[in-house]
Length: 220
Image (cartoon, rainbow, N blue to C red; front, side, top):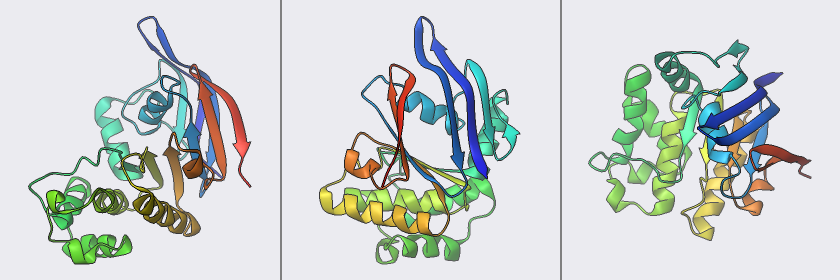
């Protein structure tokens, strides 16, 4: 069953055509990688899928609902309820502990639950670091806090933007292993990456060039 469908999606900023007639479907439980050079439209596509921007033309169907023309407020609600976002730059609150950073996501969704937040940190191997501030955590640990924060509200879609971009090889492997486990459990994952080794773990790789889909490869 399709969880996400992009129909003839275009995005224009003034004279710049960031995306041109993108057509793509993502099945429930699929792991998809999006690649392409700088300026190819990866970030624009991620922002549209993640309800952080709206297309200039075309339709975005998420979980059977056309979200293309929803208001900014409604898109915020959809993003909160259905999408778990993981960023390259972490975006953790520096004066909150790892546990509190995860609980912040709960606060905007429903009610903070310390036990659930701790379980999310346990899932990414950080229970022992729950009371540490971001400044006391390594880059890999901070990224795992971001993953726990993205998972806490049980999203139907996990959307990760260069999730290993700031990590060394050892921490990259830890993060990818977490994604593999999530995928095995049935999570739908879209990873935007520049790293072919990260992309090859996905089931399919979509390559963008000049705002268009240049090719889609099925990974073996």
